[in-house]
Image (cartoon, rainbow, N blue to C red; front, side, top):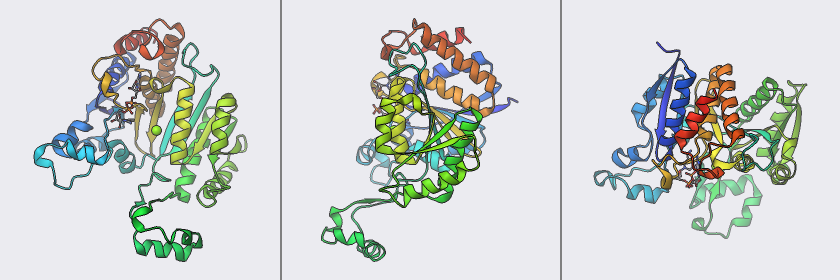
Length: 372
Ligand code: NAI
Ligand code: MG
């Protein structure tokens, strides 16, 4: 029996192309793993009304971790329109299966390393090495939203916070509310992950990016918990910055920062900006990590216009594979893979269209294999 069972989820569009590249590289690395195909994505929504079928969840529960390509996701009404005729008007609602996976398996850490590999013509600078820890399950993306605003809720809000009275004259259907929910446990665990990572990989600082001067309660709680956790890591300095100023500083002095930790929506923003500093979607990898399970993926989507053409850059997927190897404790294989990816980028002869070349997805995979 293989040492690891890895759920294999190519999903939709270019997810299939880049996962093929990952397979070529994993085979060459001789990882002692069994790859278990697991169905996820648009096709399963259209044909069966569920983009994350129960059989897939059952498979995931038997696996060590998962590797995921990308999915196609569409707004509620469009999704309903594309359902098979016999499934229409049955009250089915589309929910993103990757968001579903994060919640179902409590994958609370969204790990997004953004490292510049020298030779990449898309690098903003060559000395960037950022690692973003984004809380993945709560914050402004908790999904607790109201529209129209129920009268009872409005009355309670006004009772507990007089600031709400300012909106008394606004009709319920003209007001929308999204809750930013931060729990002490949620804050503690993401901050602890950031500090553990900084300790393991020798980063001198952890930067907490919030906005406590305005979001007094939620960012305030993040700040308090960050200070408490930081006290346990005397060798690492805690820096506290505001999200808006941090966006400027990341452009001005990106190499001042190392590990960054923040809540869900701020993390979404910081990580996309940081990804662009080191080459954008073709290079941005991520891990969705819980205490006992994890799913690794490139951060790009299914890019339907390139689906099946084997044109897109598999580097993001290969770096996600490297993150998986790290998580499995296969440190040597992870280092070998990263060095091979870096060598291919540095040489610059095998490049996909996004970096000015005309090599295919599979060419890049073979180039990486040749440098392992
Ligand atoms: P996208 O990330 O799929 O593609 C946007 C553009 O970025 C592409 O047209 C392409 O020009 C470029 N690009 C993306 N990946 C690339 C790669 N590996 N190499 C080179 N260029 C690359 O985003 P878009 O077009 O907004 O969304 C397409 C679908 O993907 C939508 O249905 C969306 O909901 C879904 N999506 C899924 C995600 C996921 O699976 N986690 C994340 C983001 C979007
Ligand atoms: Mg995003």
